[in-house]
Length: 165
Length: 91
Image 1 (cartoon, rainbow over the protein chains, first blue to last red):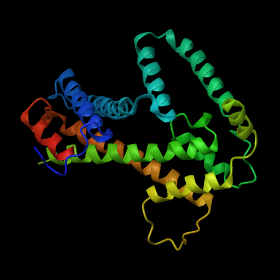
Image 2: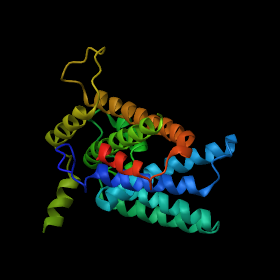
Image 3: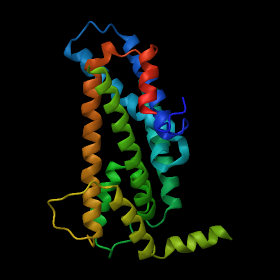
Image 4: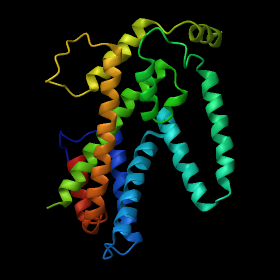
């Protein structure tokens, strides 16, 4: 077991892999796989996609603004599915959270004159929680988010390739 | 006291140096684009635009892989010995 290629067992990659594999097993156990109706396949696809994001967000936990935003989104999504009335409540909570974050970062819009406000806004739409970040946070969070996304893609690709043969 | 300093710095503009440094970190994460004739001194706007494109590409890859996995799901059983094999390959 002293493989020099083994990464740190508590690395992001291994945490994500363990969680994601576990989630895949659960998804497989939920419905009979023999049914291959397009609706079933689509539902499975959605569940797998959510599982991938969930596994990544839980592996990063609340150490990052983007992971906190994603965790919050995932949790409010699952509460809404259990209780249709809670949609209104979570709407109010989201405003409260957004207001709190934007008070902490007062320079969300003040950096005009640097010539890339439009591009920065587009980036804010792509990074979870980006709407509340100032420019510095946005750039920093984006770098980490990209690293996590590439890990996610890497692991999912290896799993898919492994089971394709 | 540190909160006052932090509040002061948030009122003034974020230093260009900080931004340049963060942008260069980002640039290193982006895939190389051989066909573009952009030299090392690509503008901040270009780096951000490339970053947006790259993130959208990664999102699409995750979508495609989720789709692939949803079709392969019947053969995946993480509790079996294969899981151990995968884990050793991945980790």
